Image (cartoon, rainbow, N blue to C red; front, side, top):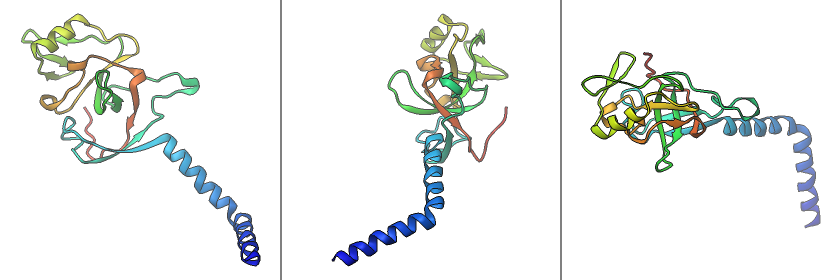
Length: 176
């Protein structure tokens, strides 16, 4: 029994000595990968046709984290992952308006963002009229499939601190 344990101990020592570098490199790579990236599955149709229900996406968790924990702002049209302020649900939406930008509502009651119009219910319109400018450290997010999306029209602007990452792989990425 003692010989078997002794042989196993020496085998482990030999493996670490001969292969320690590659094993450490693989371990370090795995730690970095899982610290910086996340692989998620879309569970909604609010981003159709860009992201589909059931599609796997890759998320860069450090896209908006600067040095010394200062948050960076997403760019307009970035697809982001965040937790909603109402129920803390993890969702994916597109960043549409940044801090300081105006919320424009047409005479007919539609939200205007660039050259696009988004339908507003009376309660959504009333909520947005109360805040005509996006406050500092907040953004407005909207789903691409606007008639099937619960977004900033419903739960208000999103604090930048709630953003968890940026979607970096969507095979059918659409540029506006």
